[in-house]
Image (cartoon, rainbow, N blue to C red; front, top):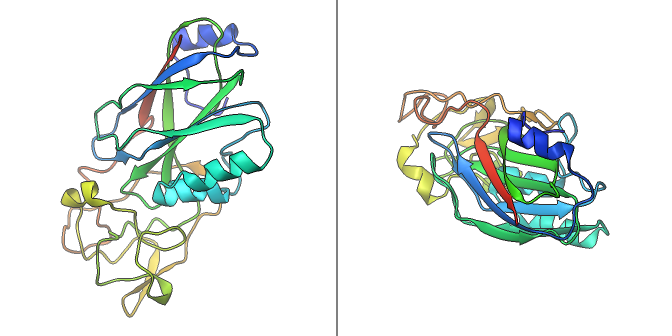
Length: 255
């Protein structure tokens, strides 16, 4: 299993997991961090031929879109057109720190495995993921914890995309997929600094160049941050935005 260690109840349930029947799941996710926000989640019920992410390998285009911008549509479209046996749904809104999402009901349609992806904002390319969790056949409520991963597709410059003094190559606005800068939508702005020189990037005439993407999916090594709100290397607050794994708790009720 490519997930965090299971609780005792969870481990017992997995022992009785087999080919899941068509069941209705009720799903929620709890944000365990103090300063990160979760984007809407892509939830996928699938067979064994679907692998949304794999540590140590290059991220797919769809995973990149989620990890860098919270956009689930690219991966959802790929799943729907590449012939894999699955059912996917994007659900929920933003989940604030130390809070739990609303419950979401999801039909598995006989698929035995469950996966989930959500971006952590504000970050460059961090996501929380559940990969190929075996759906128990026994009704009950189960919990599993999720780690934060780095998609390895963008340098962790930790620069606020709302900083209009800087742009990406070609004058492109910061924060988009394939462009330096963190995705920083309005809910994240109040706790962000401005004017950082950037971590692991180069500045040329007010242009940020992405020069240090890791190239492979891996456990996220956390953000650096600093305590300088008007400069320094990072626009993240080291006293607010840093985290420890696991970053999320997922609650799944098999009805």
